[in-house]
Amino acid sequence: MSRAAVKKSRLMLRSISEHLEQAHRNFGAQQKTVGLVDVLYHPHNRAAHLNYVTPRRNTAWIPAPQIEQGLEYLRKLERRARVYYVEGLFLPVFARSLHKLGLQAEQEITLLTYQPKQPLPAGSPPEGCTVAEIDNQEGAALWWYVWRNAYYDVITHGTEPLYIGQTLREVALGHQIDLLVYRYSFPIGVARVTFHEDTAHISAAAVMREQRTPTLTHWLYRTAVIKAVEQGANMIFTSGSSETERKACRDIGFVDSGSIVCYAEAADERMQQAGDHHVAAPLFIHQQ
Image: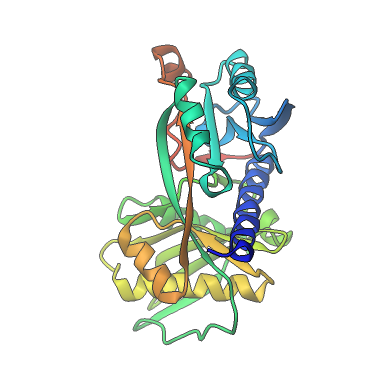
């Protein structure tokens, strides 16, 4: 890979990292700089997405003692020691440093990115399907019903919290688009796209199990991409949870672009009882 290509890739991965960190702060996580790392933590919520150490921006190398300082800050908050970062921004030796600190790989989430070069044709929707953007309370409630209904296959990406209570506010501010798919007036699927500066994240999707097909999945992602571009995004990322979703994204034009990784110390019984959740678990929390 040429130097220019490496630089472009790093800028793109940095944008993804900043997008996700901002999403976590929007949810209520606070940020504390400790040496060469940032510690994000939520005052009340112990979920993994919201309590972690991450390297500071523009740090090419972080000595192990600096990482340990951040981990110790989390421990004092009675949070599990955890490091969360975009892998392509750091050399493999960084992971070895984490192992030496007693951390173990907990989760790896594949990243796929799309940079629009020309308008993406909408394509023909599957038979009887239409899509609507949520703009009222009734639609927001229906979106959550579809997402949480046991008869729907959830495509959860494990990188950005999902929270109830601020949907319409986030939509009005231009931070988010919620899509609701109907087939002959019956809701069969949903998707969420979040925004930060000029990046967009297809952060969640769900399709009714009996209706789910590769064609429908492909159309849902394509529609989400088109909506993101219409709102001004020049880079879109996602992380399909299975090869079916990743193939749908690649068929549209997404490319594999690294991964988000999480390293954590082994959870003791006290931390588990306190509510420390696995990094991939989706969050459904009422935000007041």
